[in-house]
Image 1 (cartoon, one colour):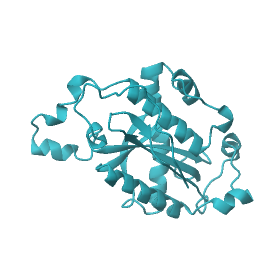
Image 2 (cartoon, helix red, strand yellow):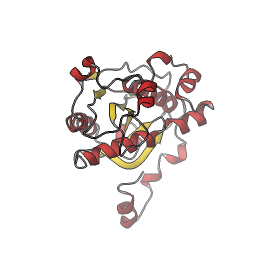
Image 3 (cartoon, rainbow, N blue to C red):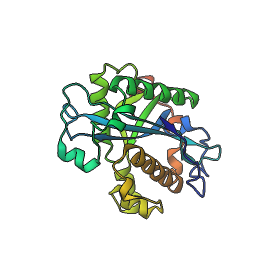
Length: 243
């Protein structure tokens, strides 16, 4: 399932004084993709992944960032998955609900569909890999990596295996807030608590927040030219898969 977001989250370009004019140049050919997962517990190895939503972050010609198309899935619990009732009550998901079961996908099918769409976006913007953006990002990455291993999808995944951009840290820096709802409010973004803890809604709000921060906190001028400085081939090789 996909959904398009409106690209209207900034009042000025964050790259006004920079030479960067392509998305691939902004994050060293990494494509930021906001990800949120809803799960049946906190253990990525044993607890079910129930929902996932992804939003690639794109950039207009004037340097303004905006959320791209939403790609999401409701996922059937993998065979033998643990379902913590307290977690299900908190996120409001009933895995046995007939309406949910009618649209839920097999974990492997869902992941590979999402990865295929993200790879198309990555290629379109001349980026070499996706980097996960999340609110408490390592939680989402942990469940994503566990699902990738479970479904033998490593060669299909466009994501960096361990690097992330975390909006908790960015929100603390920009607004002095760490909770998603409070950070959104501080940024002037509407946040409906009754819709929270849906992967789709939380991903959309995290994407809006990430864009708001990027669009209002420009890069330091001295940082723009770092990749243009002479570096050894050996160092470039070591950095190839690092941020």
